Length: 190
Image 1 (cartoon, rainbow, N blue to C red):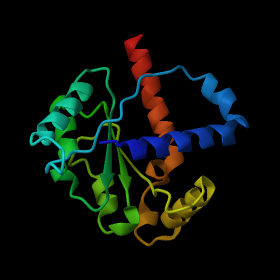
Image 2 (tube, rainbow, N blue to C red):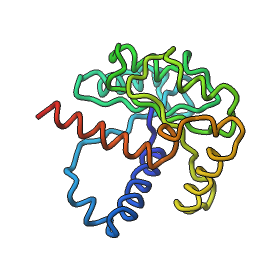
Image 3 (cartoon, rainbow, N blue to C red):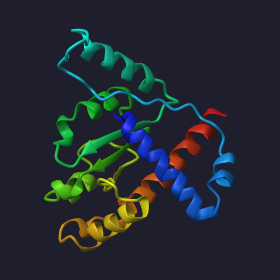
């Protein structure tokens, strides 16, 4: 699920992307209607100091409350290092979105587990109806521009990652897919 850190990075990326396309982030962002967005906590199984013993159940209930309505879009953030078929956030998504029509997944850390990633994101083993987008996060003090250049270099030159179709690679692609999905949801609601 998306965390506050993921949401902040994504909003920053969208603002910079809007600025590069229009010359003015304010102009672009003011024309976009305000939509409610929810930052869902990551799944915690073991309580740490000060957390209630039933922290897992509380977080699971919060997540399910927000992803259950048919108007909700579901955005999973997955590490390339995990087995997608055993990922709890995907299991939660599938429990309320059987066809996957409301679910999009971003796959992070592709450089940490490039072996088999192409198959993971192109096979239809797991019903992620809106598909996967592989991204490279900023590292350390990288600027947005530096991170995008590194992302392009990684997916353009790595012997395994360069085989992944460019239509499912990169933060700009992810931003575009999320905006398209938001438009679809708005159209469906109206």
